[in-house]
Length: 477
Image: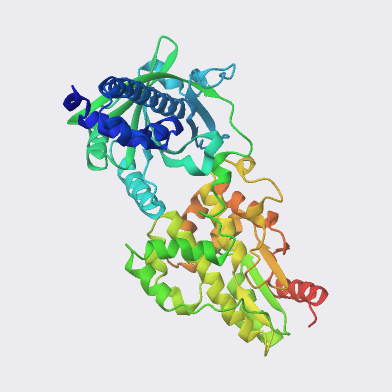
C-alpha cells in the first residue's frame, strides 16, 4: 500500500502542493507521522486523491483560460477603399446589425477566405516572415486578393498582437488550400492558418494545425463587429513604422543585426553620445513629394544664403540604403529613422558656421511610413494631433520646415521628363493617386514644427522668391 502511494504522480503532487499552507503544515510533521503512525497510509491516500482533484481542476481552469483567449480574439482586416472591418467568434460580442454577409459577400457564391497570422514573439523574425509570406501569397494563385490582417485581444493589445494576411479566394482554388497547408508545415511553430466558409447565411472559421498531417482542429462561427477607435492599424504605427526615439530605433536594429549583416555594419559605424545641439545659424528643411522641385530649390537656397546643403539619408550610411529598402517595413523604417539621427550630427556641426538647408528630414520619414502602413483613404489616417505627427524629443529640431506641392499632373510630367530610375515608393506615388494624397495630408498634419506649404507650380524664380520671403519672416537671417 505504501509503495503504491509513493508513485511518481504522488511525488509530483506533493511537490506542487508544497506552496499550499495546509500541505506545508503536513510536511512539517511528516517525519513524526512516518515513525509508526498506523493512519499514515490512509492519510497519504487522502492526500493523493485531494491532489489529483486539484490537478484536474487546474487543468480545467487552464483549458478554460485558453478558450477564453481564443474567444476574446479579434480580427481587423484592412480595406482598399473603406475603413477596416472586424470580426470575432460569435460568443465574444454582439454583432453589428449588418452581419457578416457585408464583409465577405462572395462567400455566398461558394468562395473561401483564409487568414494567416505570424505567431512568433520575435519581432524582427516575425516582420521578415510576414514580408516573405506576403510575397509568396501574392504569387500563389491568379485571381486571389491578399490584404493585411491583425489579430489581437482587446484587453492586451500589444501583448497579443499578431500580424498577417487575409486571402480572399472567390473561385475556391483547390491548389491554394494545398499551398497554404504547405506553408503551415514549413512554419508550423510560427504561423496560424484558418479557413472561412459561408453556409446557410453563417460564416465559419476552421483552424488548422499540423498533427502528423494538416488537420482541422476546431470550427467556430464568426461574426462582423464594430471596431475600436482609433483602429489597431493606427495604434501599431508608433514603434514599428514611426519611431519616436533613438532608443526605439536601436532596439530594432540590434535585434536585426543578429540576422542581417548590413544592420551589424551600420551599428558598428555609429557613435552616438549626447543629443547634438543646433548652432547659432538657422536650419531649414525642404520637404515634398518627388518631382516637386526640392533639388532645384535647395541648390538655389544654398547659393543665395551661402548655406551648407545636407541630405537625409546622409552619404555616410547611404551605401546600405538598397539593402534596407528590400527588408521588412519594421527594419526598413528603422534604417530611415536612424538616418535622421545621423544627419542631425552633421546638421549640428554645420549650423555652427553657416545656415543649413536640409533636403528632407524626419517629416518625410514619418509621412511616407504612415501613408504606406495605413490602407484605404485619407479618412483612415491617424487623427490630427496624434502622437505619430509629433517631432521626436531627442532629435535636433529645425527652425523651419517648408513643404513644396504641385498638382498631380505637373508632378508626373516632371518625373517622366527627368528619365531617372524610380524607387518603389516613387512608382507607387505615380500609380496611386490616393497614396499621394495620404502622403501630403500626413505632411500637413505634422506638428512641432509644422510644415509651411508653398505651391511650387510657378517658375523657379517665383518659388525661390516666395521661399526667401518665408525664411526671412521665420528665421534670423
